[in-house]
Amino acid sequence: MNLQQKYVAFKTILIKEWLRFMRIWIQTVLPPAITMVLYFIIFGNLIGSQIGGIKGFTYIEYIIPGLIMLGIIANSYANVVSSFFGAKFQRHIEEMLVSPTPNYVILLGFIAGGVVRGLTVGVVIFLVSLFFTHLQIHSLFVTVSVVLLTSVLFSLGGFINGVFAKSFDDISIVPTFVLTPLTYLGGIFYSIDMLSPFWQKVSLINPILYMINAFRFGILGISDISLLASFAIIIAFIAGLFIVGLYLLDKGVGIRT
Amino acid sequence: MPTALSIRNLTKTYKNGLTALKGISLDVREGDFFALLGPNGAGKSTTIGIASSLINKSGGKVFIFGKDIDVEFAEARSYLGLVPQEFNFNVFEPVVEIVVNQAGYYGIDRKRAFAAAEDCLRRLGLWEKRHSAARELSGGMKRRLMIARALVHGPKLLILDEPTAGVDIETRRAMWDFLRKINAEGTTIILTTHYLEEAESLCRSIAIIDRGVLIENTSMRRLLDTLHLETFVLYLKDPIRFLPELPEHDIQQVDDATLEVSISKEKSLNKVFTDLSCHGIEVLSMKNKANRLEELFVRLVNEKAAPASPARASIA
Ligand SMILES: Nc1ncnc2c1ncn2[C@@H]1O[C@H](COP(=O)(O)OP(=O)(O)O)[C@@H](O)[C@H]1O
Ligand SMILES: [Mg+2]
Image 1 (spheres, rainbow over the protein chains, first blue to last red):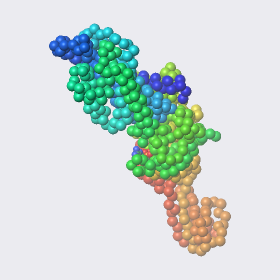
Image 2 (cartoon, rainbow over the protein chains, first blue to last red):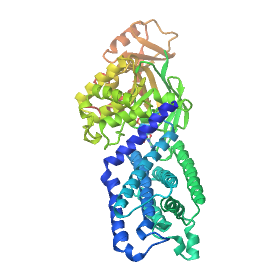
Image 3 (cartoon, chains in turn green, blue):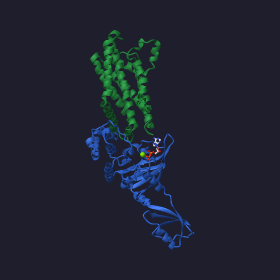
Image 4 (cartoon, protein in one colour):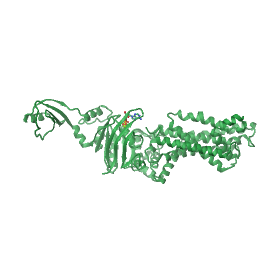
């Protein structure tokens, strides 16, 4: 396959993924929008006014970056894990496996699908948030690059989960028991400066903390963590997970007997 | 003539320790209509799965139009179209998208992919159904969808794994006609089946596998001829030095007191005995020679997975 053909194959997977989650938008795009409206009503209007601000921002302003990130992380991951597991389960992954499309293009295609889903949900939440508060973006470059990289990272995570998943239970274990707690404890709702020194240190081993803070810097211009550390950690995770994902595909783990 | 598919010493042992292929070698000529016949569990799907990169082999080599599937995998795969035994499309996806996407995986850009998909779907009578989700199709239509999908990139070799299993008789006939047509247009076709009738009616060449071993690889004509013959071992009363000329019969001398005679099932054995005794040869006793192929066919026919029309009696 020449480069042009590989690009066509990549685009095909991306379009297929996009159509897939849009076909089921009631399950994929609508729920995060509704959850966010609830967050905004509760934390923005009902109890937010009683909590007081953090670092010069109202409470709702402070938590919006984290809420957007929560949606992006959960949806990028969910898109790839369920799509790849579904492709295995219904065996239509074989459509790609018999074709000349190289494995890295397949992997990139699934990641791109996860990123598009993450971004779609991110944009929807962002638009919803505009009804409740006035947001300005401090640094567009940081905002966009953190969103993209985080989305790539969790798409890769979802992919690896999908490779190993043998049942529908297996695709919800990691999101429920790992991702959700780490995201909630990653400083969506608070600054780690508000924690005791011990819990601050513990928080630092949570990679999601770095992403949420980098993203908050992009929007609000404040962060608990240095930007450089955040980017370094995100990129290191992406590199590691990409190598693992490609290795699993090359070995045919879970897909070639 | 170039070889469309060449398999050398193919072996496969599954993770559970089961050896499904025990060293299979075979060649399929370009333009051929080739049957891979064998009872359930013989290793047909395993062979095809390996050729189409869905199953990792344990040993051996596979070439598609001369391209090693391990080395020049992209070329090898682009020559091949696969219709697997089990449905393997996304049942929620609309028919046309399934076919267009498949073209995309072969690097065919979307505009040309749509044109190719339309052509294939029309040929298989699915164009009216193009916007339906795959799960809304009938069984026969699903099968045809898989054929359309396999043809969308214009493969030179089409492999179909039991394409007519569970398909009603009319659809089967229509499918046969279609396959004959694309074969006449130049596509090499390999199909696996455990219906003898199907292989006989469609194919010019045939390979038979059983329990992971290749038993026969020949032309359909020759196979049918062999199946019409029965072989008997004759034990002679007195040893003979040499066998007299008996041009009417197919007789071989095994040793000085044993002969083997192959005779069409419709013919009487009396003539053999008469002609032998004319030359002073007296037969003491005889037995029917066990024929592996024959046994296999009896099993195939007895499997009763056969289609509504029974396999022809002349073969049983
Ligand atoms: N994934 C698998 N794991 C273990 N054994 C398998 C697997 N697939 C097939 N087999 C076994 O390999 C043998 C050959 O199977 P298969 O190639 O499907 O035969 P056929 O297509 O001729 O019916 C059978 O005994 C079958 O049970
Ligand atoms: Mg089979």
